[in-house]
Image (cartoon, each protein chain N blue to C red):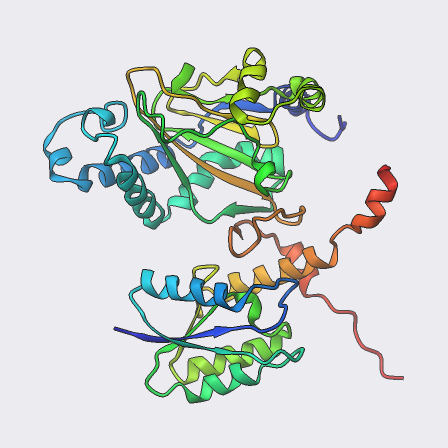
Amino acid sequence: MSKFKGYISSRVFMGERVPQNIQNLCIRDFCKKNKFHYVLSSTEHAMENSFLVLKKLSNSLGKIDGIVMYSMFQLPSDRDLRLKIFNNFKKKKKKIFFALEDKELNMKSLELIEDIWDIKNVIDQNKPDLQYLKNEYQ
Amino acid sequence: MSDFFSKEENKFFKDYFKKGYSVFNVKNLDSLKYIKKGIQNIILNESNKLKKEKFDPFNNFHLHVNKKEINNFRLSIFRKLNNLKDIRFHYFKVASPFVEMINGNELVMQKNLNLSIQMPKDDESLLDIHADTWSGDSAYETVVWIPLVDCKDTKSMFILPANKYKKFNQILKKRNINDSKKLFEVLKKDLSWINIKYGQVLLFNQTLPHGNIINNTKETRFSLNCRFKSIFSPYGDKKIGEFFEPITLRPASKIGMNYKLPKIDN
């Protein structure tokens, strides 16, 4: 049975805040569904733009086959850093899964996942100013 | 209406705005057959009992599966259906000429197809009157509903036509309606029951109240549904990545999303 370690956030990511126990629940369910042995999650630091834990994981998984992140949007928003981390895992032959999106990050899915990131960024940048709309239609 | 659309398109839009739904004849029958055959194989492989029998596995499904078994069956078929190779591709091929007319041609598609099995007299698998937006769907989504059997009356679904929506809002405002059963009773006479055959596809505006009631016919309904929306239109609670995935992102959008103005070093 493949062994996977969970990876969760302790801060808001891409405008989402998910309680840590819910992130773990989702990861555990994903591991069960895929018949992975779940190894307790590591929690990323709360400081903005910190990926110290994620970077460390790419170098210290040992016999563990990879990580299951709660969501693909917990990856760094900086594309270069995102790809660097992915390449690091790949070099070490470790896998990355996203529980919420039910997806593996690999060479085949990379383009789709990058597209989703780009679309999410554009959508978030162009969110209507709700207060403005409220005033407009009152 | 825009002069940039053809007369036929403008005519269709007018009708769609009025009714809020449209039934089309499927053009890509090969993809439709692929979907139906795939589900038929799943059903027949589900148990030896079904495999041995020679019967229409869709319309006569209830003759071989009892009410107690239905939920496990549904879950199993749903899981296997969504694991079928290229199933979303074929679903899109069935839907594309019509959904592109309504939503445009840069689309996101729901990651899993939904399956509905409505056996005669089954009162545990009902979808009370609702609009998808009431539970967090974006108003920009369109539902593509594909029946695997002919459907009419209570074997089908109902929808409140768009031209009755204003009346519905007034009723909701004035009257004390606190449950969906009451709401159905009040709207009953205004609802349209979709008459649709296998080989046809229904597209509908899911902001309009719709649902089903107990199937009082002697046949089981098998239908699939899946949501599509324009990639860059606003999302509701069903987000990109977790619920939707882009399927037809075009070059100009890819270029635009990756463009950065050159940096000038003064």
